[in-house]
Amino acid sequence: MKTGSLVLKLVDTKYLNDFIKYGELHFGSTQTYRDIENLGGNVGIGDKDEGVFRPRLKYSGYFPNESLKGLPKEMGFRFPANIFCVTQLRPGIETANIIRYDVIRNLYDSLMSDTSYPKTIVAFQDFNIVSSRIKKKLDTFSGLGPIRHVESPVHYVDTKKIAEKAQNIAKKELVNEGVPLGLGSILAANLVKNKKFLGEYEYRFVLFPNAGDSKRLHRHHDNIRIGSLENQVIIIGSLNDLMKKVKVSFDIK
Image (cartoon, rainbow, N blue to C red; front, side, top):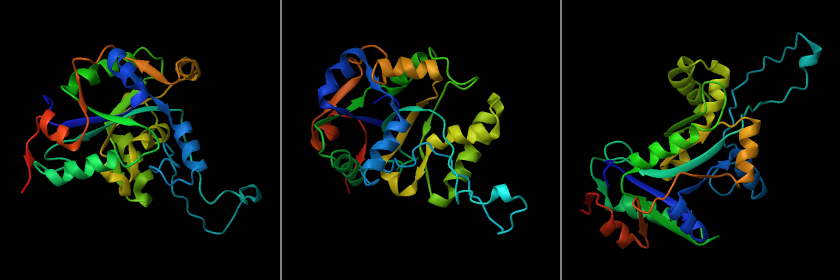
């Protein structure tokens, strides 16, 4: 690894050839993820509220206007988004300065725990190269005003603080780009999840498509091609493979 971090991607094995040969990446829509989790009772990876900004509302019990009666107890705001994610462990940030063996083992077991479809773990030689190609491709989309896409590690916080965190991200990262705070908070909600999913260690690329972009993505099954990854991908077939093929310092004490 040349980026100082361990970056992994879980790929459906039947799409592995296209992933490597063409750099075909799946940018799934948040609406699709929400629909899947709602059908399954939200027992999967916590996507029931994926990309939803839900500000906390307080009611005094007094309604100065009759039309305010009957409002829902909570409101959720969302904007169309398509997400590609990887798993990233950065020594000194997500982990201690040396990535311990048990962290890698637990991560590997977690990635492979879903047996609903055949999957392959891949690692990247230099994710900086891959990342720059992803961003270049996303720049070909029109997107939403000055913000076509964002990228960031996912922030894992307490449920009650998800909206607050999204708003803080918007203040820090998006308002200066000309995005109103309210809209920015809705967009930033795609970068925040419940802290119980901390072990996913997600790093996300989030595209905010306009109507034309959405149709363009839909025609390609929400897939984007960035060019061959044959020189960048390392196939990980086992935990032992991960230890041997990826040059990361492990502390096994």
